[in-house]
Image (tube, rainbow, N blue to C red):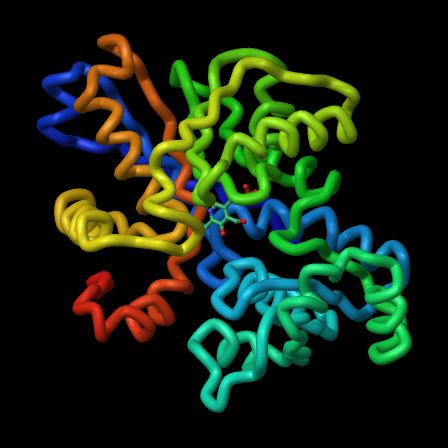
Length: 308
Ligand SMILES: Cc1ncc(COP(=O)(O)O)c(C=O)c1O
């Protein structure tokens, strides 16, 4: 996968930031590869190389019906000559949502499994069944997080880092593990879990860095108050924030990850969480493909993220 693209760093101009004397620059990973956008590209990079090395021409992975990872794997697989299989949680709907329509259009074979089967997806017997059905494949875990994804994410940050702390949304913790590996204990990382009860991510992140390089880092903190009730849950306040943010900064945020990150960040700044002159680098990890499906799902609730 081509690595010669450098993401833009966009400083935010904002009255709140000026008053608090806190600076935020946004690392625009969302602008890099529209189809395998944000952190996804970094997570896939070394996995695709490894799959080629192992002589595998099929990638198999797991995800929910709106998964950014499914979308990105379908696109990257098509681009790099892999057959792709997406094992999707739940029954096949009559009409596929935009994420799954896109995945199929990229050539991904969708395989729907019950929620119960999905829960046991990492078990050897389920993986064996999949191998019998589909033949040999390179297995990418749900969310794309493994040691090679950590290695890829350790390349996210630019060489020169003019900031005091890096802030990033968290799902599985793979991206934050990669940032910690790159920072080698320097500076601070603030992670904003998109899931309720995100404290479990301390263990997940520690396991990932230990497994990757036998090191534990303590220069990070999880801010667990901005999940909005749980994964993919939103309210009108969050949607309004996302729409106002786009108008003000010309940056579109997604409702699952980056919207919650920036909402939380601005809320913390209002509360005086950061000392004056703090310089933050906020990572826009993409996920914008999910907006179409979100708008479709939430139109009855009169919630709509404006994209144009
Ligand atoms: C857009 C976006 N941002 C952030 C994350 C969180 O990344 P991680 O699972 O590595 O914590 C994800 C999920 O993978 C995502 O899709």
